Image 1 (cartoon, rainbow, N blue to C red):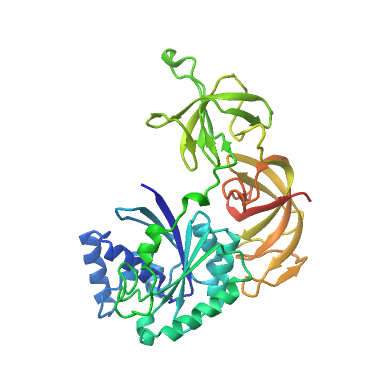
Image 2 (image 1 turned 90 degrees about the horizontal axis):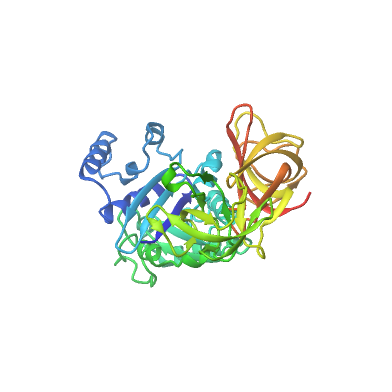
Length: 418
């Protein structure tokens, strides 16, 4: 069964957690004891209704302040699909958490309060969704019950959001009027909005086509682990384990290993359940080759006539995540990219971007917590990558402070060169 990952985003109090709670509740994905617990907590908080937001706002600080701070992951399934939800925070100071939760999403749900229309946070999250190349964006215009299910108000929000989205690269944009509190258009179509002719949110998530979003053209296999013979019985077994990051691998395929440049042929592709005829992303497999080549963790298996870019210089957009120091030119950091690690230096800080206005501030002195900017990096060894717009797996990386081992930035590669 196909997995769909989606991330929710939106301003504080737009009802993200309530919407997810409603999805879980109406698809009967909640255990009885969970339901009893949130009913009890709702009464303690003085609510005269069951507060479904409590299903996702698990941290005590989140419940006390009525906000989402950390990324909460939830799982549910319908007969058509399995779903992984990343409930991301709305506050500006948690932009880094939003980037983390949305980085692997197939669909982004941006909630907009029907009463307030498109606000700063709506624009910020639409920009982040386009920056992270999330292929499908669904704008849920929530709290329709509080404006009398007014079609005109819904169309105004739609028009305003569309005008802003035209400045961004968003390939698929859908608008759904909902009331998370009452369940209108969440799982079932609502009788309160006969003027809306589209599908419910759940039906859209079940039907949205995601298979073609993945890169099945560029064969990429970063080697994570070398499996050597563990006993006399398997003395001749030597395989390379990892997760397919792009393309398709089949027995008989001619492949090349980077950085050595040696070529060989795929002898077999083994999964946890035994040999498979082909492997594609995001399958975790072990590839065996017909030739005995020196291969180690961090090497890349690809096709001889379709190789990733190999360069020590990369251009990237980064979101700075450290509360202590900012990112500055000449800074030295550790970089983790696919299964490869390297030391890098920031050679240039081109601009910082205002995620509300999309204005570029040229040559800033630093990037501070939650700020996004374009930088140039120089690596001590070649990295094998594709531009993020072509392959999200081989086009993303993290930066780590070597002194504290803390992740200080998430980055996406936009090109090579200085």
